[in-house]
Image 1 (cartoon, rainbow, N blue to C red):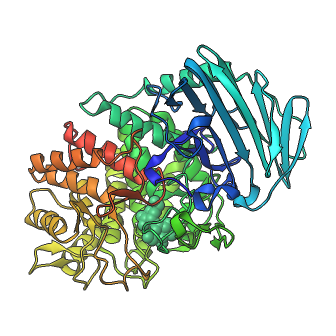
Image 2: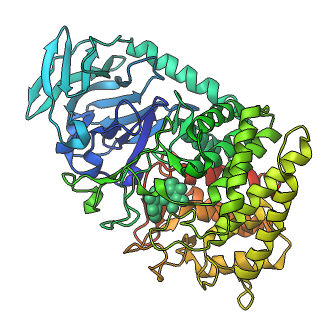
Image 3: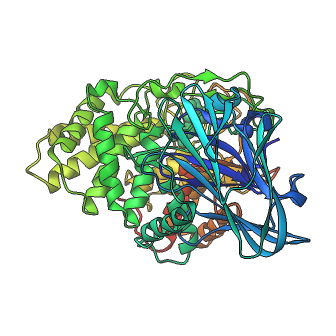
Length: 597
Ligand SMILES: OC[C@H]1O[C@H](O[C@H]2O[C@H](CO)[C@@H](O)[C@H](O)[C@H]2O)[C@H](O)[C@@H](O)[C@@H]1O
């Protein structure tokens, strides 16, 4: 059975990540990309769906490591086991790759002599295909269809096959190091170029340290912020500049529930929000890279804009159910692909224009084609904003006139107008966008506001609330001093509370998302509440909530999408960009960054 979600740490190479449990098992790994099929899928089934465990023999029955941590400023994970015979450390990392992806596991003797074991169970195609194994000059090679995986150790330790797994039993003494290297390669190509694991370890540390050194945030929550930024960076797909929403598929929003989705794609919403925090903390290069990704992805007719794409801009992300997997703690179905790709979500226009506007204010140079694309998006939005949509929560029920979608349509028009005002050499119909901006504003205030309860609602005509309306002052739709903003913050705090944190929306009205069952408190929304409380002057409450949110991070600083306040455990895909974006944003806000754009 898989571990608790919060018992996982990640390692990654900016093209994919692996989830490593506290008991030393890699239970999730998709190769060669985030969205490739998994060769370790025990996370969504059991060991027979593939995993790789290295741990002391005396801890083989699942005992967790004594402690673990990342090396400072890196994504290099160290898990330490203190045993009766001594202390051993497993250093896990994935070197930023030139060609072939590697998972490196360096076993280091710290004290005494510790008997260790390694058990590798490769199962390609999400845990379904047992590969054909063979030996070739010091390697074990696993081949199935398009995939091959090469396993070696330095220095060599004997390996043997048993029960469709590759085993190694060895001893590590104080001062000794034994590295295991697993390298993926297309099966039709000849042997991959092999790298020295110990040199790769030094290089990996140096790569991450130099990236981390560029972080410009130096406030009271620096460690937490830096860990979140490293996590966000780890979710970027460096060959294209795309950014995935999370590293996993189908970790449930409710244990044994059906809300299990594949997040290994680039949502324009999640990616732009990721970018905003990267830009604000000193990482402008990522903004250039992502803008180029965007321009390639949205090329063509703006009517065809998707709300999410594949890592390289792929458009077809067909949703399928993998019926051979038993699901994380029996949460079914396990899905790959995501049907939400074909939804209309008007907010993404606002997020894209806002993000490029913000990046420009931080020094992102204009590029004529980039503005042409934004202009075309605006022209399209002018004809569409009146329509109902699926909204940022990607409901699978009927389309509605979501208040947040309209607010973000307003934000798109606002950023377009302000861009033209600041850069008069650019062309565009500023008058028409100004008119749209005013019309959307009037309509939202008339149809999306409940006067009796003094709060914005989820959609026109509904009584339900939506935590996304907390973003109204942040995007500048209304000032924080407006009584309607204060009323909304208070209403959300009161009515969407879930164990001291915040739900996305009221769940009793199941018709709005069209899905059965419930879910946990949504962490991004809980961070938004902290921001909003601070903005309306309730800073002590905001700080208190923020500190409690920080307390939900696991031992290595990672957050999933949601939190179950009853079972006190993390829920949903992991690690989730949305949650880490929220953390960085709130830290910036509470450290004195100004409010609305
Ligand atoms: O809950 C239903 C929807 O859940 C997913 O969407 C959520 O995750 C997205 C990625 O982080 C985020 O952009 C969105 O705002 C969230 O609601 C899932 O991807 C959808 O298919 C599903 O309908």
